[in-house]
Image (tube, rainbow, N blue to C red):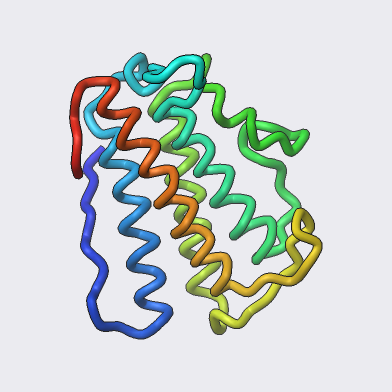
Amino acid sequence: MAVERIGPPTVAGEREMLRAFLDYHRATLALKCDGLSDEELRRRSMPPSTLTLLGLVRHMAEVERAWFRRVINKEDVPLVWSEEGDYQAAYDPSGSTGAEAFAAWQAEVEHSRRIERAAESLDVTAYQPRWGEEVSLRLVMLHMIHEYARHNGHADFLREGVDGTVGV
């Protein structure tokens, strides 16, 4: 998978800035996984933790789907890896391949981009049932940046544990 990570602009409008930072963090996750085999993507580097790079990719596919499709777009779709709504199921990479996980994640990212671009403004709101309140698209974009940034920190440690690679 060819990954191009473009640094966010230093001066831009709010929406362009949020898009750029979100895409930057999406690309960072992909770069953290770049060049690894399925076995390496499944490797737990800090037992007893079961966290893996492949599990992070699967989790982020669920997060993209949940926030953009289920909340903002009000689509009645199940999670990718759990029809029961168990977000933890995505972390289990057993039986999963990198190709499968990245295809699902990329598909969800494309849905998210389409939904965000179609929204008339960042002030669009939708009901978030887990929180029991309305949320704006602005909040969703900021939450997604936070979610990726946090998990990219995990990915730093996981990748270093797999093959010693640091940075990106």
